Image (cartoon, rainbow, N blue to C red; front, side, top):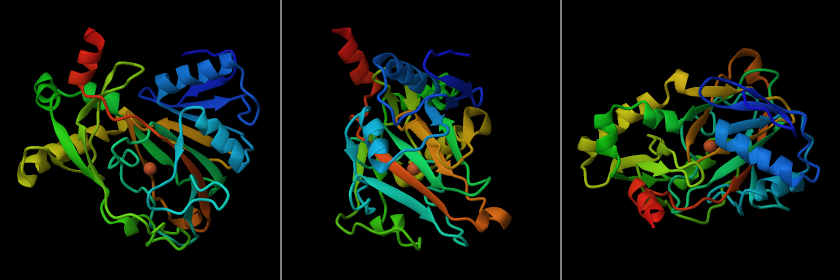
Length: 292
Ligand SMILES: [Fe+2]
């Protein structure tokens, strides 16, 4: 287990994730604390900082240390900080926003580096968020499958913009943009760690470039089922005041919709700040960049 001077990190599973204790993100962080947070972030891919008491501005300021904060293209943000938006499930609603394993906004040319999600209101238990480690999803493929995927690109699409708000009582559509799409490598290289990760999900990946839908569908279905195996991931349990930070480049996540019994009676309000990313780096471009 990795130890840090500025906080305690308790691993969640063998695959990924850590709970972080004994650090207050509303304070000015020392450069040593900041360096350690980045080390933990790159090691665990998802961190959940417990017992925080953050204003909207403090969530924004912490998130902004990783990069520019970008608004959701389809969902209305807070009146004072439009880049941050709330994901709200009212009592009795059975749909889960993000109820499918995905990497956020994969249909952008520059999909997010990551995001922070802050629990404002949540049920006393349940409504976890499940994550999966896409480094491990790639590394556990056969050499034959890796060789097939390494040079491929895929077409990623947003789908109907209204689907991000119209099923939910309390989420408002931004109503500005049409559907979006972007072509990305199916295997991307993390710019900091140099590790390869699978970058594909049925949530957004519609087809492999250069193949028909019928040809690419069995491969995409296989990769999805392979990626979401329980031993490759972890689950975050939410408590009011917890703030999660995940690396959107190398993991998928989804909101577990166990809205039954007691869990169904509670309102759930999560607040997200999305951090701008880079254009995904293919293996070929990474090798070219590093051969000079
Ligand atoms: Fe998401």
